[in-house]
Image (cartoon, rainbow, N blue to C red; front, side):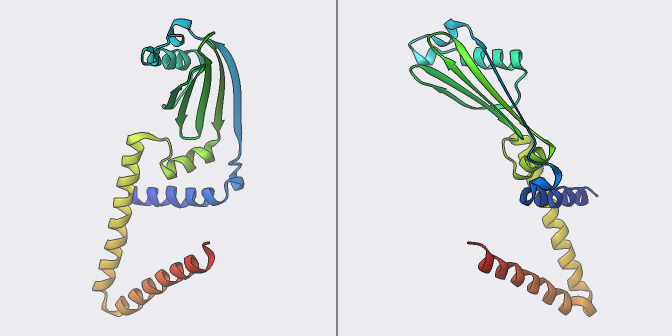
Length: 179
């Protein structure tokens, strides 16, 4: 039954990847905010001594940010902190002279969340394991079906022919319609 739930999830999200507007998949909430971080955290000329952890945890706590840090870039005048998760992104731009920052947070809807989980985008190691285990389940289900087909003498030739025809149709669609 686990395999069937996996097949249902990935087939449904396969449709929503191609047609996100069918279920309102384009809904987004974009919020902007600003504030100040401790000047000592960002103003040190030695960029190795910038208080990265303190900055990220301050922003997480104050603005309830989610996701993993995907970028922490330090320039002469500015620090950029980007956090990403499935259907989520937060970008913060901090002025190194003043400690003032501008924050932009983007939250997308349930369809975007499912699509990101389908692709494994910004979803971490745990979800990567789920995708790998799902792939193994689907391989087992497919191979067991083919093996069972080989034991049914009356259906063997027709079943193998149908599988080969299906494979050829997919290949032809790829050759003809994919640029």
